[in-house]
Image (cartoon, rainbow, N blue to C red; front, side, top):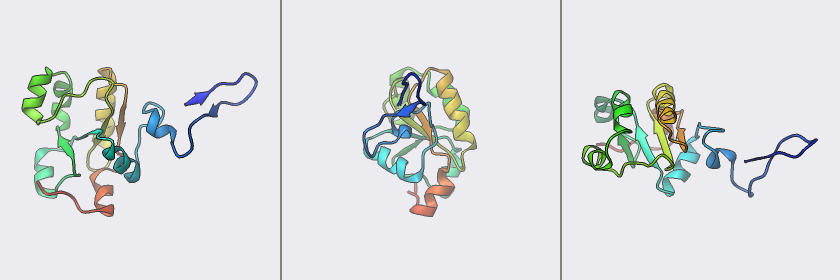
Length: 142
């Protein structure tokens, strides 16, 4: 995203309409509601790390899968077939785009760190989480 030019300040060199956030997860891992909506159109894997009872009680963001934070490290290291059986979703590769969310950003930030420590390179978080989502649109009931 950043072009270095000797003797000048670093410059962002992006096509019009694209933000660094959409292209370089490590540079700006926090997504807004609209950025998450846009990424969902591109079939990004969205993992909600809240507990199952939270999903059951309050609902979920559409097209997200639930992997509670306490299971995440193990889940991201599973055999792809086992992951598919457990979560009914294709196992992400370490270069696939993945977005984490929770209720309000604390657990998704931890999830981001876990995934990065395992070598996932295109991970981001929706820091506003479920609390922010329901301000924009109703949740999906399980």
